[in-house]
Image 1 (cartoon, rainbow, N blue to C red):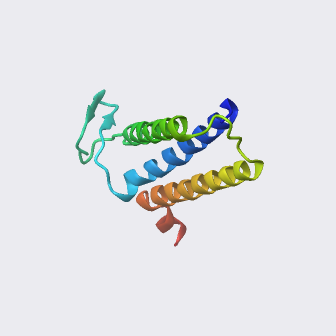
Image 2 (image 1 turned 90 degrees about the horizontal axis):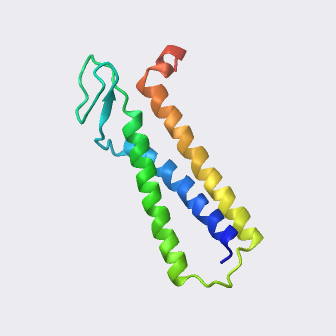
Image 3 (image 1 turned 60 degrees about the vertical axis):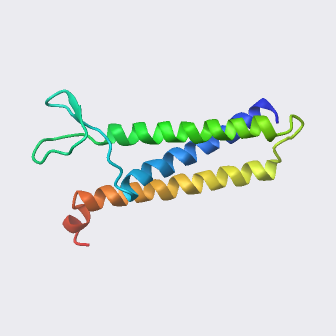
Length: 126
């Protein structure tokens, strides 16, 4: 596989995996560390009445998990992929469309989750 094809495949895998793992933190209520900016500290528990930012932990988890999946795909492609393999333009378009679809669906769910959590739908009358 050409270096540019390999880079395209790995970037596509990384983008889709990060989006999916970020949504997994919401779907499965994964317990992650939260940053408390007023105290300048990280804690595993969510304290009531104290502002905290869970986004940092969610992003870190998503990027690390996405990186692990991308590394696994890289190892598999290097081990079992042929060096003469060329990424078919149709396959590249399908991969791009699939990744775009995954990211759009995941971002839509993220938006829905945040709007629901903060009561935006209720304020809009839904």
